[in-house]
Image 1: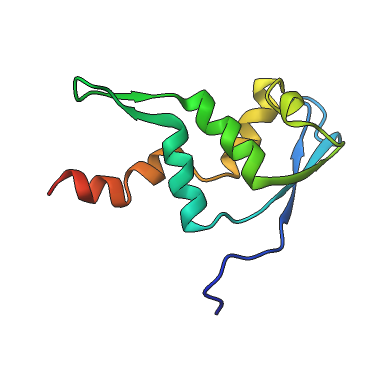
Image 2: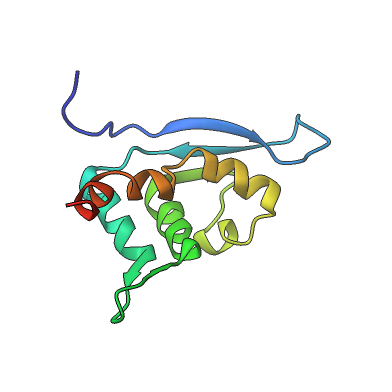
Length: 113
């Protein structure tokens, strides 16, 4: 058992077309460290001066695409990944840490104290 995050990205194949599952996009996802996940929270959660919470999911996914995706085949830039059709983007986001999982960890525990 390793105490450190896995430095090797894991390859995933996802269908690129709803009707033709032979057309695939390969996505290499790397494991993020605890500190990277904490940085992710800062990208999408803002505490307002009135004590409210603003959540920006687009900022979260931009961060995740940039930090957790090592490469794709065909090769896609970050701006291209942000312009993917929902069918493909939804499959990619399912491979990544989910924002609700980050919010239910240390932040949730701290909020109840």
